[in-house]
Amino acid sequence: MKKLLFLLFLLIAPLISIAQEGEIIVGVVLNDANDSPLENVNIVNLNQVIGTTSDKDGIFEMRAAVNDTIYFSYLGFKSIRVRVTNDWMKFGEVKIKMTELGIALEEVVLKPVELTGYVEVDAKIIPIYDNYRYRIAGLGGGYEGGQTQPGAVSRVLSSIFNPADFLYNVFGKRPKQMRKLRKMKEDDEIRNLLQSKFDRETLMAVLQLERTDIDEILNNCSYSNDFIRTANDLQILDAISECYEQYRVLNRAKEKQKGK
Image (cartoon, rainbow, N blue to C red; front, side):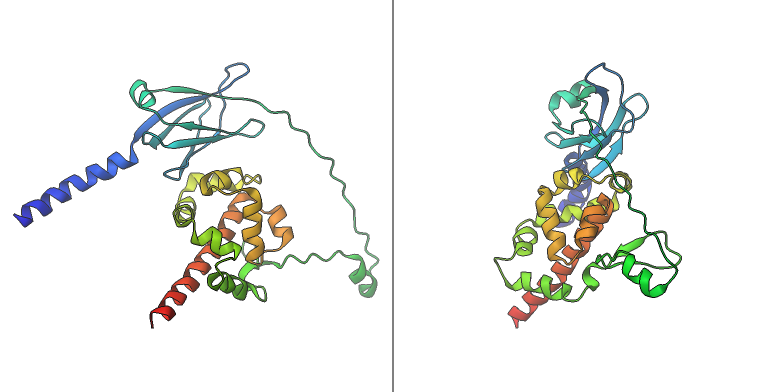
């Protein structure tokens, strides 16, 4: 009898998993002003943490379940969230209309550095940025020092033992949201999306954090103000993820110490 129940469970388990993940939904994203299709709109299922983009006709496909929230973002348009309904599942393609925003570009002033050729003089002229950013030969970009900065580990460690600490309140009380960090890092569509964004909107939507919270997390993990200000959203995701993993390791060590 037990073997029969076990076999029955093995047969039902995949069906339950599929039901929780939902099915493929179809939609088309349009400009609300003229109903023209929007291509390459960034689309993320906030519940399942998977992403996609619309094609040249504005059409997209994505796996979703009823009550999942789908997040749409596009440069120059107001980001929106749409909840998946039974009607969407039943009737198929749904039209999603996005409203265009006016964009005012700030003037950028470039200040050239004129070198004299004398090391003693030029050393005082060249601006120094205290951002602890490094570059390894052979790699495409640089990386922020973050946890390698003096005192970084001790700051994260203090958050483990201090219940009033900001990191404790964010990481310790949001385990479900923080687990989405790993899903975001594993989804290629989301990574490609974040690599080209600097507004933190997608991160805020998925992790349910305010921009000030994201900045505060990075500040508490010893990332520089220059990095926080200039990094793209993918770099910010990796930085938060690194800090969270450090937090988890230290937290497990704390629990083991308490159990002795």
